[in-house]
Image (cartoon, rainbow, N blue to C red; front, side):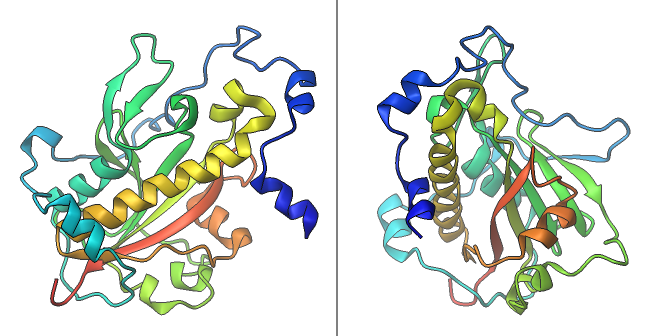
Length: 251
C-alpha cells in the first residue's frame, strides 16, 4: 500500500536532479498536439464557439447545483450542445506559433495536455451512433467505428455492469498519451497527468449543468477491456476516465 501511495507524492529533489535530461532539454521536437486524423476518416464539423448560444447559466448556480447524475431521459443532445461540452472540456483558445502546445479551456502542467477525448455516441442529433474521437484542432468529430465489433463488450459491461452508462446520450472517455507530458517533465509526469484529467471532468460537470444535462464520473472500469474498446494499446495511450452524459428530467 505504501508503494502505491508514492504516486500521490512528487519525486524527491535528488530524483529530479539525477534524472536524465528530458527530451525537451535534449532538443527533441515536441510530440504532436493531438493524434492524426486517419486518411479517409469520416469527419463531422462541430459548431464554432462564437456561434454557440448555450451556457448562459451563472457560474455560481452551476457550481452550487453540480452533482452526479445516473438517470437520463431518452432525449438526444443537439450538435450544438455536444459542441459546447467538447469546447468546455478540451477546446483550444490559441495555438503556439510553432505548434509546440495549445492553450485550452482547462489547465495542464506546462500546457502539455496529454489527453484525447473519445465519445460513445448513442443519441446526438445529426451524428450516427458509434465511437468517435474529438479533434480539437479541427473542432470536429472523427469516426472510429459506427458498428461495435461483434466480440466487443458494451460500455456498461466494461464498467462492471453499470447499466446507466449504456443509457446515456453520449459517454465521454478520456485517454492519456503520457509522452506528451514526459517530453517536458520526465519522472515528474504521472501526478500531473492524473490531476489534469480531473480539471477536464469538472468542466464537464459544470457545462452539463448549464444545458440541463448531467454526468457521473466513473473510475470503476475494466482496464483490460476499455483500452481495446477504444482501440488504444494501453502503453503509449491509456484510458483514464469515463463520464456518461444525458439530459436529466427536471433540470
